[in-house]
Amino acid sequence: MQDLEGRKVLEIGSLKIDFKNKKVINNLSFDVVQGETLAIIGKTGSGKTLTVLASLGLAPKKATVSVTKSSYQNNSITHSLFPNDIAIVFQNAGMALNPTIKCGRQVERVILRNTTVNKKSSRVKTMALFDKVKLSDPNRIYNSYPHEVSGGELQRVMIAMALSCEPKLLILDEPTASLDKLIQSQFVKLLQELKLNEGITILIISHDLIMVSEIADRIIHIDRGEKLADQKTMFFFQEPEHPISRKLIDHLRSWHLQRFKSDTLDAIIYELNKGSKSFPNGNKAFDAVDLVLHRKEKLGIVGESGSGKSTLGRCIAGISAFTAGKEWTDIPKSEIAYIFQDAYNAMDPDLTVDDILNEVLRLRNSDKEPLDYLKMVKLDAAIGQRKIQQLSGGQRQRVNLARGLAQQPKVLICDEVTAGLDLQVQYDLIKLMDLALHQFSVIFISHDISLVKFFCHRIAIMKEGNIVEVGKTEEIFTKSRNDYTIDLINSAGNVKYFLNM
Image 1 (cartoon, rainbow, N blue to C red):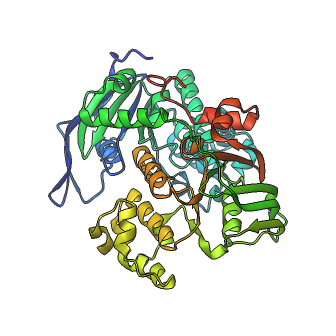
Image 2: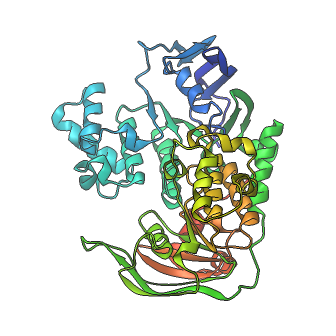
Image 3: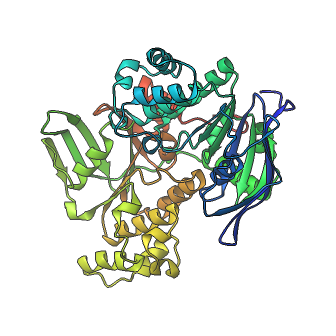
């Protein structure tokens, strides 16, 4: 770990931010020390991103900002004097890049605008940067539009763009939020190498405590616009300063110290033999898949983006059709509920939650009320009067789950239902599902093997359209000899300061 008593490169004093007289950041001070990796953590809506952007003079126009000190390298930061050696990588790389310009050209434009490199040399420098951030096929990326490359590759393009100006301070906003765990693991290693080789100071904004534990020298915890803790990483995890920080760490520790499920499996209720799905262009989502599901079983299907797991789930639910293979089941497709990943777009924004649930209950000729299902997912009656856009991410997914339960299914297929949620919200949702879905068979689709570790009886590992391994969860985690499965398990990470896993 770096010596954190070095020179302060960024200093912010008594930052206050109001929106229409509503205080959102209250008297918050922090600094960044040269050569360190500082993580600013907090749940969604805590004010962590706003704090950093406002500190650099990049607050929204409607915000009223006051600060007693805002300096970089002992020079005041203003809109007109923004330091050239600070680079920011925003959360959504796909939104940050221009969809009409090829990736290589976008990096070149930044180089030409901010350095003395000429046009001929800008391509050479771009390719060198792509190599530095370990893009496996720099020529393809250079000539591709943003929509033609993966999320992990887009993040590396954004890092290359940020490095083009040779920054001294690199700021990353939720850099791994939308990435598969394997890609996240590779990304963390890349940042560690860049820090070591380039001598860059790094400021990370994140809600991912596991990722932060692997890379940060120091952690600042923000909640509701207040700074709760500012500690070296080891002490934050072992001796958190604030009760809210302590509760967060205890929550994480208790999750990872749970035991594997050991229930005896019941009778088989669904069986797929040599199931395949092809598209008109000849591409295959998955090929010759064998799968069984038992009554009351929780089955995890885990793999990277593009492995075919979601398409397999949709075929099992009857939303899409298999192009080959045989199914056996004593459950009609109408009794399989599919819970989509994006709860916001899966429900009508013009309807209240009660209306959304009543719509399903009418179709099922049920005499139950929406409140019956809201109670199942630990939501109160007041939620029923709100529209989906008025809810938090965790509340939306609970409503999404309640709608699935209102279909009175025998099988639920949950497709990446925790994606994009804060870590604590993810764990709370999994625990809720473990209680609420005790009598149901569940197929839980995820790219994060750590989330299925204690929820599922068995796990099927998918890679490139094939199931490469399937077995009891404990055996997968403790006895697997499949290289890909082992990579997935290792990528899930652990908090080295208090876990012995």
